[in-house]
Image 1 (cartoon, rainbow, N blue to C red):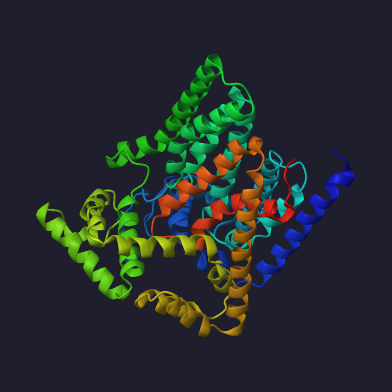
Image 2 (image 1 turned 90 degrees about the vertical axis):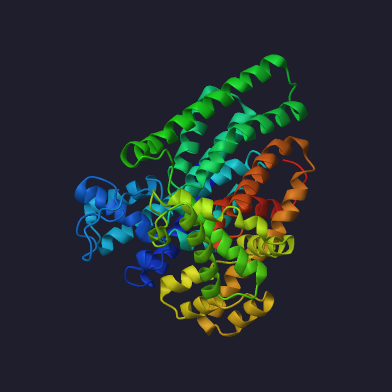
Length: 471
């Protein structure tokens, strides 16, 4: 590629870096930690690894009131390793936050460049538009400034998809090996990646068959070779993931990837009640949930302490079992309302509160009140917007407008791309990944969970902008 063709790409990245320097300079002191969701879940194990040599949620002396050492089982290790690298050199200082943000912004740029390559499987021109949409996406850009695992998770997810696209076009063992490693990395970055890992063999099978049927001739020999690749990916990725599961089995007695499934199910149940019924306050929902758990604990002779230690490895399964059947007791109308709200928030909310928190703009109490009061649909949303201060309102309008406009253009781009049968295998991969994560989030849809999906959505948006029938 010539220097002239590289110039626009370098200019885009330079503007991106300057913008991020400006945003960081305007942020709160310690903003990446203060504004990051679940930041302590990743930073504590990182500090424990460097200071004590092992991953722990509560290393010795961390909490003055107790010296109980809590094992790190609520998540997976890669993001904590990422943070530990910078903590080793800088400690928890201001320069530590700067390097974490710089590293995550670099990962976002790399994600944008890989997304550009994915786009080129479908269209030969317009790649720089994808790069712009991915790295300047307000939801992704803001998240790159926070101590949250979404940015590195997105990088692994998009990298996996690139090699899935490459495999669909050219079935070779290098692509299979890279898929195996990267898919395992998604699961070892966030437990949610395990669902993606389990789905990859099916994605490979369906996308390759689709490619063979509509682009090439499908033969028995080709199909058998495909099955070999699928088995290899399943075996290698499962083997890598099982290293962490075996660690939990050896040290804590349970062969699990993480101990958040019980808490995750509980959060889904509480959100189902909040968004589905619409007439319960947060306090009432917590009381209902606690009552159902205590009743189950009493029947099974399980300590009530599990209410307060919901991510303890010994309490994970009891909490899950206590609530798993409660979902079937709610009416289809309650489920429908909760699903619609979840999907709407997942795909159309802007994520403005992250930037507001990061910049130290007032308004957090509005969200607290919004979450605690009964949810009444658009009336609750309008009340929230009406009470916003001007700065928060402008951020909210910009982020939300970007999300809504992107979804409209994305739908247009998807329909346009379907006109070319050669695109079908690649579009199948896009849609299957979107479906996996949409289903996995159940009732907990939020802008934060959309971050890993933003590159796909931005590729579809770029298709909608260029509107063309073929390459």
